[in-house]
Amino acid sequence: MSSADGDGGVDGFFLDPYGMTEQTAKLNIVVDNFAQLPSNKPSPPDAGPSTNEVGVALSNLMTAAASISEQLADIAGKVDVSKDMYHETDNNSASVYRRPGM
Image (cartoon, rainbow, N blue to C red; front, side, top):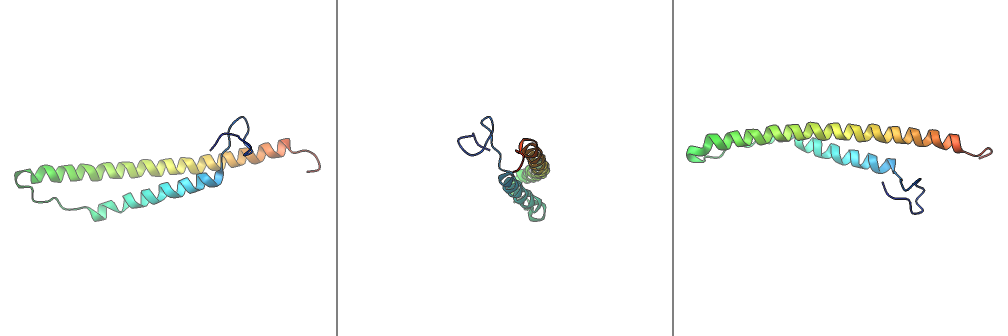
């Protein structure tokens, strides 16, 4: 997205659907990386009397990572849907405003 300065935008707004595809792909890479975390879960280190608390903290981090992964996957899906909706609206608008003979 950018302001219109000769880039074809209308009313100061331009959106590149291919840029949105790229952002969705980047988000999905992050989601995939988060998805690998449970298989790489470290065992709690020997922290003496605090070993149990360290284990709880690691478990909490893994839970947070899973939640972040779900939220990022949801965001990626919404960006993808938005891209499709924008592209469809752009095509419909273009056909409405197309001059005869073009």
